Length: 217
Image 1 (cartoon, helix red, strand yellow):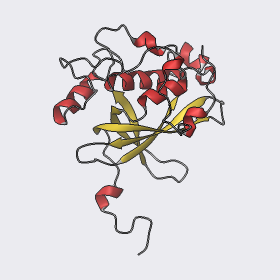
Image 2: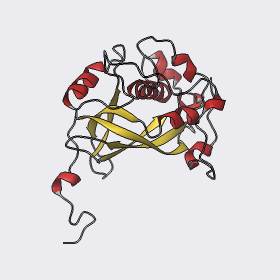
Image 3: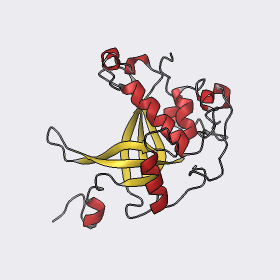
Image 4: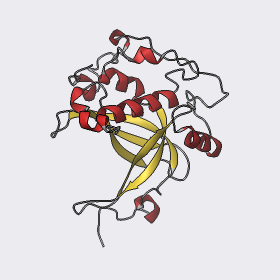
């Protein structure tokens, strides 16, 4: 009978299979602080652009690598990742996939160091990135759901280049993305907070961009 999914196809309601590789447009929804650690993080939405699961949405978060509240010293001593490290890796892979850094020369990553978390996100908002999907088991009565297993990059040193190459071979490329041996797309920005994208005339910019930043270190 009546339900929230009445009329929808079984395919649109089913989970995307574990291990699926996809290109998707990144949309920043808001920046918040963790109730547990007070660490700053961004809520994001990824909209798959092509293939069998085109137009499907996946929601995730990115922890700010610039907020000390996201650093877990105990984890680091044990060689484990913490929120800050995971955020740094995610942002780096996204920048490489979107062609916003020239990974082949390794010289312009330093341009990102002077940008705030908000400015880093502003550069990525609306860009196409690549990722692997996973199925996370539901807890406390919640159903299983799709999450991001990892972000893919054409950078051979990223640890995710194998997935990138398979996705590129299966699906094909997007403007602004760097596939090995393809022309390098130069960064669209210059270092410095003053170079962050300006809001359109008559607009105060997205609400998430106006939230206070974390504590850089």
